[in-house]
Image (tube, rainbow, N blue to C red):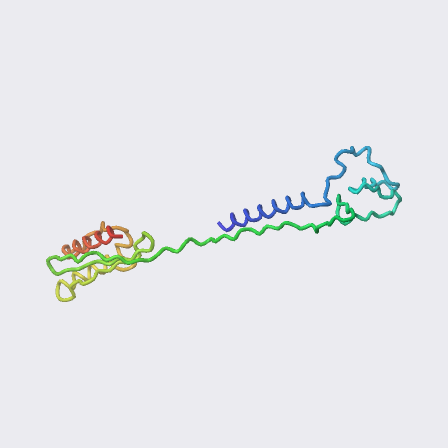
Length: 194
């Protein structure tokens, strides 16, 4: 992604530079209307420069130097004002490479009563993805508490089966069928709300 962005930015910058340089005053192609064979030759074997845009032909003496005018093609007449040439620059647009941050929200399912008590499930979502789940109000004492612990260990947490499967289609915890069923019912209702 970063390479593609750099390539596009480089292409845009080089295209802009070509457009600016091609359209800059004082730049022209070398004698487009005159064939090479007809170009005057200065003693010493080099071709003499062609006429300047102002119409003045430089001296053809060996060692003579040509001073370009301040602006090619511009003539100043009394009472007119010339403006300075400005170079167009374009800055590459700033783009962000990070994706928008997903909002985190919590959804709680209804309280489901079953043979050993009642429970409800709370899930945390980041965007539409479940990132955490926990059972609330589960029995803590005796055999019911042990069953609740088994269900909580298997289903809940950020590394539990709910996060792994991203649905209420969970496998039943052996020895805790009623608790598992109640957990799945509350979870499904929470998913339906989300």
